[in-house]
Image 1 (cartoon, rainbow, N blue to C red):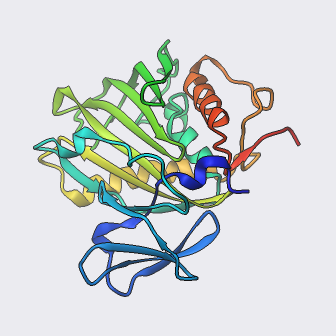
Image 2 (cartoon, helix red, strand yellow):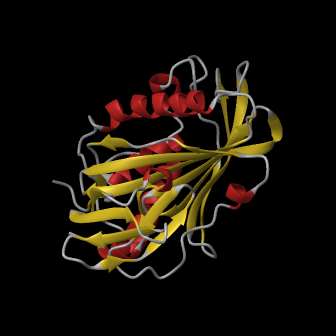
Length: 281
């Protein structure tokens, strides 16, 4: 199942910095594809039967589509902001639905239990009221006015702080997180999750960051974020059902799950169903 209009979306399929002329084989929605650097130094993506696919290089990654994208890749203005460190975190393969991977990224309530003493800690487990909306003009899901106590909000953080968060879902398998920047409290650090759907129950996750942090070595920034996501992977790979249920009655949400509820409603509205379970089984 191709999941309605999801075939016409942009997806990450590799990091620009790792491209060479030999290229690498991967997959997109079960279709084998090949990603390589062309003679002109730009990325090229093709299917194994020779069909040339559209390509964008942005945010450190190569993006492509099996269909005909109706709009440009979403904009992250902070990527152009002077003074930010742009961090290609790498890739983590996860045996779960690409939609589950995004929804987990949107979940605040798991911080004290999965990322103990880093992004959360007991007894600070309550998720306070926050605001969620589907912004019709941009056609994106946004969650704002989120606050959460974090023992180590970022690699650059010296002590525990109450962190402000905003979440944005600009595409079915991508999410952008804005959170308090410890070195610059008036600014937001940007942490993204770009998900490549290899199959309905298998994905490659490409985190990327645009941070204000002049001190931490790049390797440490990468390792910190990889550590966080590897903690998530063990949870994701044990979720049942493996696909993301879109029927409201299949999983009972709590107040902390408002973002998840809006995300599922938005997916259903657009027929973004690749990696989704539509009815109870």
